[in-house]
Length: 500
Image (cartoon, rainbow, N blue to C red; front, top):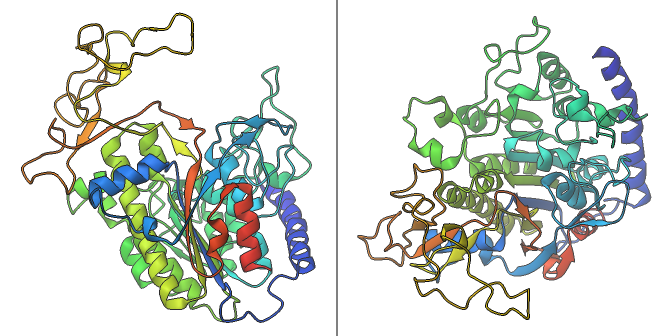
């Protein structure tokens, strides 16, 4: 491990010098900015948040005629999200979070699972690295492990997103060959250095809030403290060679509230942070109740970054990670609550931007997750049917459906439709029925999980889809995002705004 760290330190010095050089060549931040120009960028990412996620959350929480905070931003566009195959420019139409995050963080298409490298496995500089080298303060906030794909792509480089730490292993850090073996370790040892080690040593982000304490070790804490960071909680006992669950101490919302350091890391769970819906249902004595909300972490990060002395401004990335994770689980109730929690963080960012006048706020998603759909009340999906609708046009094989269901030829399968999945049938794992939710437009007596509820939701799959996602923006220069664009252009536009 020590040989790996020594090799990595040499590699990161080279990368840092290259990033700084690239920034200087581009003339980053060398002149004073006019009053109408961008000094700060806050980039908020709802992981897995497709257009229907936004629509359903709006209908659920503020009604059909209402608007979420993010929907009130003046500039709206669309983002294409596809990745590419390894060692190729051939499109891979459904991205994962790692390749999508690399696209906006570094402006390159790459393969799924890649962090901060191009499709050929070569390290590429990130916007956060360039902003830091140009004299900006930087922050990274997530409700996932801070080593997970979306936050990791702004301040680390890895051949595989699973190389999070605390230790190196071939299975998590090296791509597989066609014969089932592992690729040889690259010359650039950074790319096989656990992401937690990179974060602890590269100083790319000044403010770091999220989950993932178990990814870090006591020596990571020592290095960070030696480099001027305040570590909330504890990464473990320095007397131990490795951390244990008993030796680590997660940070709390109280720690977050009291901190005033210019450089700080706070990890509030050993894994991902607790799902909002589940946390709210816990008794006050539960440890998870001490976790801060995403909005609280966002507000604190903005406060710390905006009050640092001597910086030209700041770049902050904020991820609402659990939208994706609960969509994978096809849990509509928790998915909706995570969209709401993310929207609260958007409100915190926009509130600052309105007062500041020099802050660009960008809100989007990396991909859609699970084919989230709003279906008509009192209908059912193909998965609930005894058999899918028959092809009624034998001359056209593409036509495989009927324009309606008369209840005779196509009926519900009682084994797969035992009640609404958040109602009477929620305990049956075979149940494919939709989830139903009341909205502010429903009569007061209507309950979630009832047929009377107006919002009926279902999922197409348990994985990502290739749909475009929407983007919302506010602030000086934000009109450039009111377009149909590729995810790599988000890097170009944010970089131009912050580092002209």
